[in-house]
Image 1 (cartoon, rainbow, N blue to C red):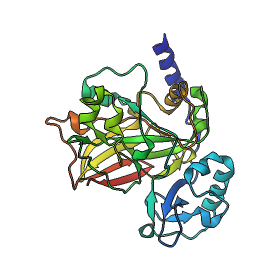
Image 2 (cartoon, rainbow, N blue to C red):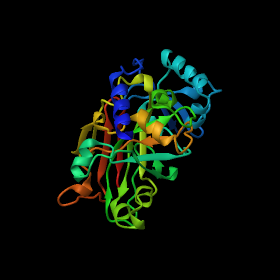
Image 3 (cartoon, rainbow, N blue to C red):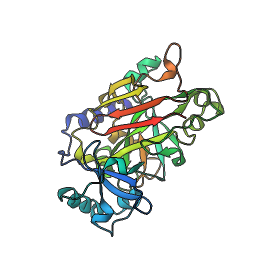
Length: 313
């Protein structure tokens, strides 16, 4: 009965038109620059463009994304005004991009959430979301290095769509879930397979949460800037070779269902990150298995959101 209800809900959600019409692309970033003191908030001027300094436009704005999201519509309206104005753009070469969200209350992850990834493992599609987590200390910026831990010999790649929560909530209905979403970004769920699958009682946490194992970025793309987050091309390249290529329409549980499910157990707060699962093509299921090594470069890319590039050291 539970499963049939869930399928009905999914069908209803997918039958509805996506409730947000894309506006001019709002791409919120956290960045640093040599002439500025500490992190600042900005707008990326298009995918791959330079950065507009929001704190220069309005010095009363907070300088961290967490505080920005906590203030809700008041700060978003300022960002919209900045987007509409003709403001100076800092060249991309002059700024350092940070993760769009740092130190969130929680990083929630979803296992086996792509139909084609389940087929790759020859396992049934889950009837309920499989939830685990990463510690927030694993988050790094979109172009930061991924450090191979001496404790692991089997570090793997996973490109994922990440949801960033914009409004606090508990026991959120799926039909209300998008009101709690600030936007989306690209995530790289770096995974130590030896610790995930063979050590620590096969609990996934330690294998997923080494330092630098959660690159995010380049921007928080607001929900009203995306036509449909569940119909985006998603891919991962290692040293230029495509290793994962799919579409977010392969997700078993969409954003609304995941928020409804997770919020039964925990309160979601502004800035919380939900990694929604990875498509097929990960290294561990290749024959023979392939793992990341020093010097590799991993590019995780999602249509409309951008690309993050992480060197393995």
